[in-house]
Image: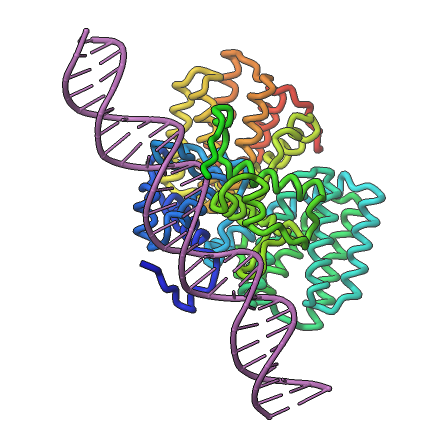
Amino acid sequence: MTLKLDKVNRGPHLSTLVASSISREIAQGRLRPGDQLPTEQQLAQTFGVSRNVVREAIARLRSEGRIWSQQGRGAFVADEPNATVLTIDFEALQQASAFQSLFELRGILEVQAAALAAKRRTGDDLLAMKDALATMRAAPYGSVMWLKTDLEFHKTVAAATDNAYMVQFLMFVSEKVRESILASGNQQRSEDLAAVTLGEHQRILDAIEAGDADEAQEAMRAHLHGAASRVGLAEEQSE
Amino acid sequence: MTLKLDKVNRGPHLSTLVASSISREIAQGRLRPGDQLPTEQQLAQTFGVSRNVVREAIARLRSEGRIWSQQGRGAFVADEPNATVLTIDFEALQQASAFQSLFELRGILEVQAAALAAKRRTGDDLLAMKDALATMRAAPYGSVMWLKTDLEFHKTVAAATDNAYMVQFLMFVSEKVRESILASGNQQRSEDLAAVTLGEHQRILDAIEAGDADEAQEAMRAHLHGAASRVGLAEEQSE
DNA sequence: CTTGCATGGTTATCATACAACATCGGTTTT
DNA sequence: AAAACCGATGTTGTATGATAACCATGCAAG
């Protein structure tokens, strides 16, 4: 019995849908650690897909460390997500609350990174930051080039912390945030904002160059606060 | 024609082997960004497995953002590792500098999490934290149970921030740090340290219960500083 | 009580078939 | 001549059935 998919369903692969569906069950606690998943047959039936698709989904979840499976027994929810990889569910990010949480996490990392950068930046770091800023100045506000260089500037700041993991994590989170913003199309466009944003960046750069950690923190905080309002995100006022 | 596997091959799934094999090709530059992968048929043939297995491998690589594929055309190496997943190389962590960087990143997250927790914790959060602390008190210092509950306590703190990503990232990093410590076998054992550690935790808990963000930050910082020295990590004094 | 075996259930893999889509060349239409 | 149509071919996406390896359980024989 062949399943005819509606044209509507031209989206991600079925295995992706199944995987995130199971993922959600785990996240919401309907499948608890140690629990055995339904058999591949059952899953195929309940989702209305072939066993093959289910297997692709399970292969994915297994690689993410969310489940483990043993031949002859079944698949089980991993006790501790002893993941070798960290994943972020893009679907969930559509939720405003989830997006806000990720934005907050990024903020924490950015602010602390700025402080560390102020203490540890080398001459090369400063050059890279100035370079990125100059490129951003030349790019039209809101263009792809602009966004790319914006990210690049923040990357140079992160790199100045001399902490490779800081770079890796910050870029990962920032990338997700940026994607989500683009997907929602909430980006405002205005030439005025270009000058504002550039000014914020300049203030960060100056603080880092001066080696003033506190000012760097504050400048970064101000920048993110500005970015948040530009994206239409109501920010919590932390006393 | 059925493939008879040697008993030797009782290891990871074939799809895993295929996936890491392709992954290696990419990492070593033999497959460059934008390049088209061989067709599933060809891959199946060259690896000597069924197309099904190849598909599971590809599904995995796709979920990791390393490749993308389009029906009717083929699979291609992703231009930028626009990763949906974040991985940490365990090997690299054996390097002291890498470990220190990850430790620092964890510290930043923990300290900020403690501050947020102090502002947002609910009654349930406090109960969970007290619970974890009580369990830790009952466990022998350095035992598996102790380590587990230690992590659990920090998780409850993270959870009190009401930021799911904070929990996810912090636990991911902490898990890696813990693994690395266990692998290096640098853990000191002493009954005295049990009391010290418990005291540090108690101080954190008290601050969060009191809603004192600054004190919570400081308490967490002190705790991590203590943990660092217990592991034999020279910490930078950030005046 | 222990050992051995039969049995059913589950995953891992293979093989084949078909549907959906892309590309390309040739043909027809404009 | 240029554009639109059409079909052949190759590729991915999915479905289906079959087989091998493996696990757990229960039961009979010792």
